[in-house]
Length: 167
Image (tube, rainbow, N blue to C red; front, side):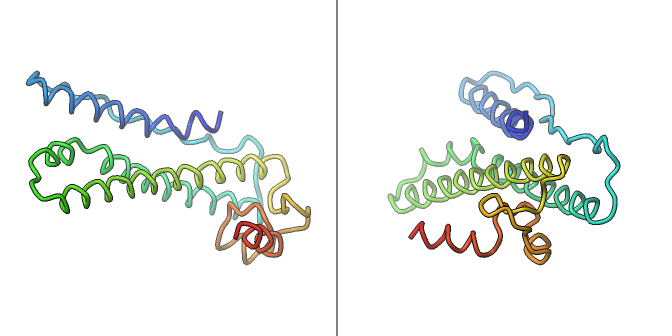
């Protein structure tokens, strides 16, 4: 369910942009697309208080910021005017630069999608009383870490071990 809600706005923006690009190339008049629908989870059914409320608010704030960034990167990566310019560019370095920027926007969009998924999972854990515990060792994640990264899933010690094993 969380995966469906996170991708609705991005997919709608991509579809609308693709239709505009196709219409522009075919010479047909461009229809105005319905605005992209972004769904926000409803307020929690249970009343959150104290630290849970604080973490819920922090997660929702980060979620809003990430969704805004995703919208920006989706629009920029899927902007058909950039694709139209590629055909006019005469210097290979310009084409390469355009392609590199486009790939970077798509990478950023993917990373932000991953963060959004972590946020949705953290909200789910918060609602089930499992928020703030390391998924590896089960010990509480420090409050300082949760303040900086409210969607953290590992304590500092386990996160360090994961990063060490990745390299």
